[in-house]
Length: 408
Image 1 (cartoon, helix red, strand yellow):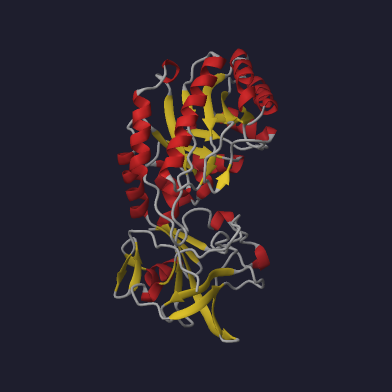
Image 2: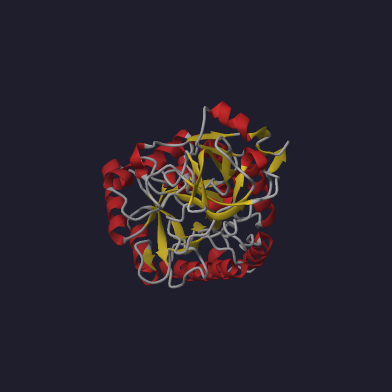
């Protein structure tokens, strides 16, 4: 048997059935027109933001990294909760503007920005987090073409990484950002060229659950930012400190202690060097804000026994929830939190494999999992589905098409 991950707090049952946003899931499925279905909870989004605001220093701005989940209704809701938005493509820029984010609230990171994307960003007035000297010069050229001074910050590839992070995005050779040693010269070039200097972006990794590692990373970010600001000599109007806050997906994962992270950051803010006294600070978070607020619902088509092993075959799968299938960068597949939605509070009795409808052995949602008895017609709930689910999965694979999505 493989243990299931921990179901996030905030989910309850009514007459044994899972409730999301005050409604039983069978009613939500009917309302949405069927399964597979992603359901995102406004209440859980609001609660997460409120808890984070309470834990972090008041001076700190909170940005949403929309690559985690760009669903339009969710994005519009987040526009009322966060202080800014981090995007990674021209397509996301269009979605961000439609959701009501103002240009001054948006920053655009990511390697390989095309000339078209750079022009669109300069024209819109969003901040470009520059990933190379060549990109900086293309952005400056775009500004000259448009007669606009572009808003430019430099994304730094620092000499350190976020210890214990799920995906390391800083330290050593990386496609992301400008190597730390090269930042001062590029910063001076950008300022001399007449751009609107917006500061630095230092993102080192993601999905960290160790508060000590996050605290260490934030201390390193502040130290490097102060050093680089002095070397550039133009002040530091804004520092995006990155994110890295993780959520528990698997058995034995423990939630990140955000109270400890916030307390340590507040102490550092009280003793900032002179070069950072006037700086505006922000963190960018994606999965931490939205991941636990989402549930993927899929219906069992058939209960099948093969060589004594029970398979619950569903109408969903990895084409919607690639990460839960173990095919989104994990080395060893472990089970996400999964439940039988109509028997949410029932005792588990059956060891089963929950699989999808695709013609590949990779299409797995739970392996050797202990769950309550389930049969054809029952709903399976996969939790922690609010981030890197619908938009990060190959929905066109085998012609299955996308899942439905609703915000409740």
